[in-house]
Each structure stands twice: as structure tokens, then as C-alpha cells.
Image (cartoon, rainbow, N blue to C red; front, side, top):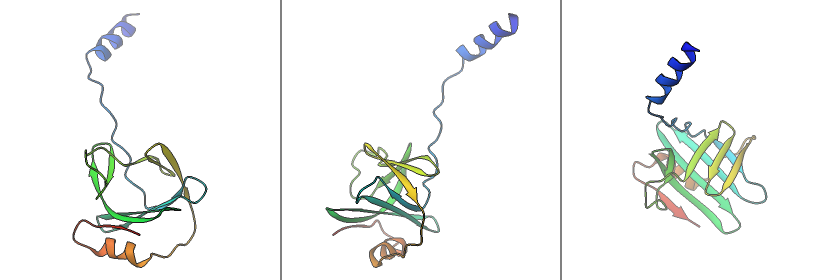
Length: 123
């Protein structure tokens, strides 16, 4: 009993810390249907490409507390993308699962990765 009480005493005085988000894993993710997210890395540079029936958005990513934000969309420094486990990416209210396969980089995503500036393009 004494060790249990001591343990409880220690826990009651500890501040609860939030765990950092997992690093964003490059790859292709889908939420099903025709929506895809692709994350690519070149050195320290991360770029996002989202595809849906509405078009394609390509943008650089930047770190914020709890995840990554998409340049050109993020106005409040809250994460747009959160890696919940190595094969799952949360984006808004949707969950995207990694799919495996060889996919070539398109020209716009290559431009984003090679750019030294913030990048944003919608088609």
C-alpha cells in the first residue's frame, strides 16, 4: 500500500506533457475514391501535393506545433497534416492511408522540392 500511495503522490505532482507528433512520412496516401495526398522530401524540404476531382494543389510544408502546415492555406499555425502512425495521415476530418507503388514526380512537385522559397500552386 505504501508504494501505491507514493506512486500516486508522484503522479499528482507531475505536469502532463503532450507527446510530439510523428514526423511526416513521405509517400502516397488515399482516403478512398479519388482523393490522394503525396508527401515528398528532398533534404530538409517537404512538399505536399493533394489531388481530387477539384484539381491539384502543390505546396511547401512547414512545421507547427503538433504537425505540419500547408503554405498558402494555413492562417492560424495549427497543423493541417498529422502523422498518426507510420501508415496513416490525418488531414482535416479525413484519414488517409499509405498506398505503396512506384509513382513518378510530376513537374510541379519537382519545382516545389527544388525551390528555396515558399511554394503554392493550384490547378
